[in-house]
Image (cartoon, rainbow, N blue to C red; front, side, top):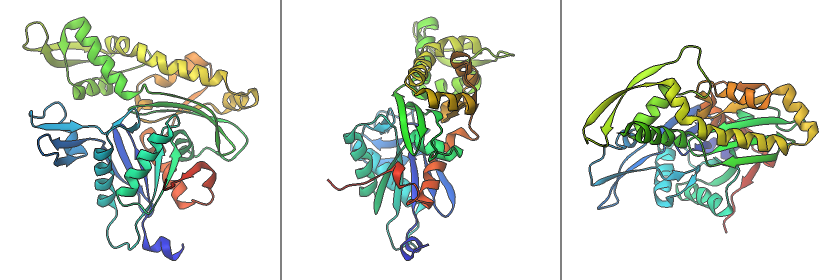
Length: 342
């Protein structure tokens, strides 16, 4: 460990549309908070960041906005993102370190140079000494423990809040990838639309998310589930209760899941035959919050005829991978993009 390393505490950030996770080199994962900032409309003053701000979503009085600064995995609101990153960095990096931290940030594989620069600048303005970018599927593969530097191929499906990334990785590079901006958020929206269209019932985002977690599925369940849902009747304008079953929710989610399945098919079609045989042997690894949807692995298995394995603790694979890269930055230099001041 060099003198510089002792003076700074390096961090890895999985900046997600739904949640942001921070990994501190000396301690592991130290923060996992919703990527939400509550702002007072009239003054632009930040009132809360993270969990406290998420609890305000859909419940805020007229004068307060609960903003999610990331849309589809990329920074949509630069100013608010910077405040979010700065707040999270401040929370985890104590001032006993003399040097500013080096930061590794994971980004979706399909993003533009402009979007990359937004992430890089946000971290630099928030107090980073050097910023490195790593593509999410690569970070997820490292986090799962796949041998990314080997010539054999590995396939990762990383389903987050804003993007689903499907990538085949070999020799420290992404051989081919498909990034679709359809993921957890769109699944929530699909539930809201389904209830609106079929039952004239209006529910909020937090309720949709709860439905997805409690009874959502991508494949028929041995024992179907159900729950009571409260919302507003769009015709009568009064609160209304509805008993919803996992069969209905599966119907609501099916079109959105089809888009991800199609992206997986496209990636497999473009994969060189030598690597395809590796994937047949090793299977497809499912990571990200979307991997927690019941039966998603079965659905992919049925569609691809390949073994599909849900990674252990899929929500933290990307940040764990980025954290591992931190500890061996030189060894992983091939998978990183160094920040440049343009």
